[in-house]
Image 1 (tube, one colour):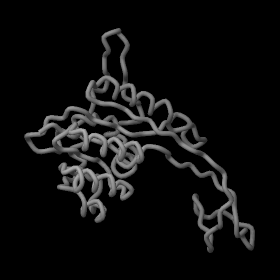
Image 2 (cartoon, rainbow, N blue to C red):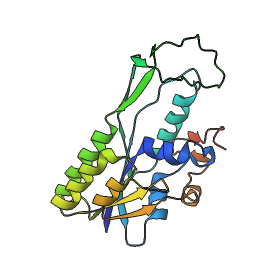
Image 3 (spheres, rainbow, N blue to C red):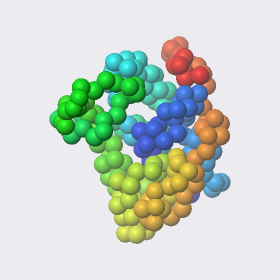
Amino acid sequence: MRTIVYIDGFNLYYRMLKDRPAVKWVNPLLLAENVLQAGHVITRVNYYIARVSARAHDPQAPARQATYLNALATVPQIAVHEGSFMITEPWMPLALPPQSKPNGYNWNMPPPSVVKVVKSEEKGSDVNLGSHLVRDAFTNAFDVAVVITNDSDLVEPIRIAVQEAGKRVGLLVPVKYPNQSLMGVASFYLRIRPGHLARSQFPATINLSDGISITKPTSWV
């Protein structure tokens, strides 16, 4: 079966990778092959992500992400589709009683009812994934599509591909309890487990034909 994999990169990251640094160096093509059952011939992996910006708490994050995206570029079947981040500083109401990290922050009493916050929003990735899925379904680009996500924003594109284009669309879910709305429209689902990630890693060093090498970030141990 001709199979295209569509990966919601941030959903996978926050659901399974953020707290597991040792498996962040994952090869998405190998991951899909390790989770899917026999009979799937993966023709393309579409990976949807946005470039992170340097923040005070982790200024090396953009460099690590760039290294990982360079690793993805070594796999011919993988196509990276980049969205963008919008960072704003809106005024927002403060929850009462207020909470803080670290705990024990000394709020002025009484605390303010409205505070200015730094808000970052990813733009484009969900729209791009859903649009590409629907386009590929109606152009017969695949026999089976597989979406790695647990984001209910993708319910309608999956429903259209299944019910209106007549295609099989499965979920590879990165959580123990999948979103029920997604389950209601998908043709099937399989759960990604930590063992799948461990078996789907790039080599620690990837040597390119021009003599340059790509090395797994040292903090991903």
